[in-house]
Image 1: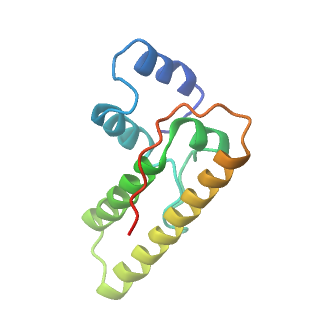
Image 2 (image 1 turned 60 degrees about the vertical axis):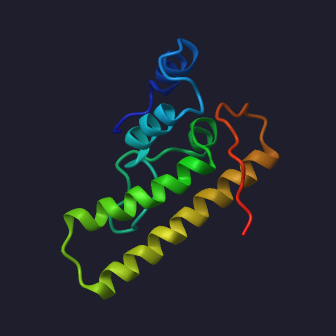
Length: 126
């Protein structure tokens, strides 16, 4: 997604007009497609238009971040021919970006005056 100026309208229509109920599998797929190029992954290839902290908190959730991490790793591998060493380095960078997203999101959740619009998935304990 190369512009975020219509996100409020898009999600109003998506969630409140019952096009795709918030928190459903369809909602997750739409957000994956919309945002998979809008979050930090590899420093060498930054997003053209990244989600700012407010947008990440308002339109994303922990389940989305988890799935974005998988999608971005697989997407990166699918169009690049990389040595195992390069793939391992890229995977570590994706994992660090994922950890940073989750940490930032959790911190914002604890300290936010912005109303969270997503659902809170159950966290898995291991």
